[in-house]
Image (cartoon, rainbow, N blue to C red; front, side, top):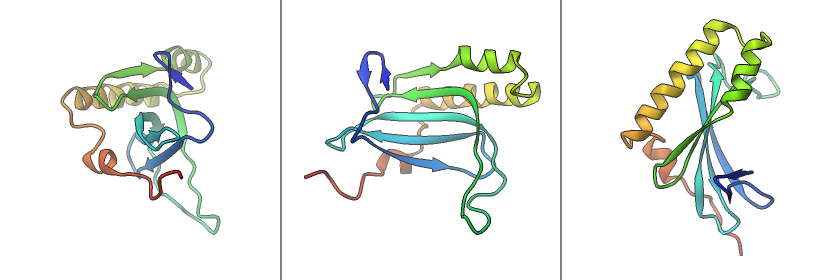
Length: 132
């Protein structure tokens, strides 16, 4: 995957993902092969009521197409707006849920501009091991 001409996800890269209960987004912190942070990827999602349920310890996360890429220096790019609009036109996303996804994205952009997103604990997390 490329963003602004730079590779941000490839074979050997690592992502640590945070999925939340009752929030309209998730966030992944991406690392290159040398385990340097290359940025953060946020999906707008249908809020998940329960995480890791049942014997399979799985959760269903419904992606609502809108995404946000945040560079380590705080610059950001809104992604997949065309895909979101196309899904809305095809009826894949209920209008009320689409409105909430747009509101959530706007909140995250505002928090990103204020340097309050991604959360500090996401920014601090590092892989357990560095490559040899």
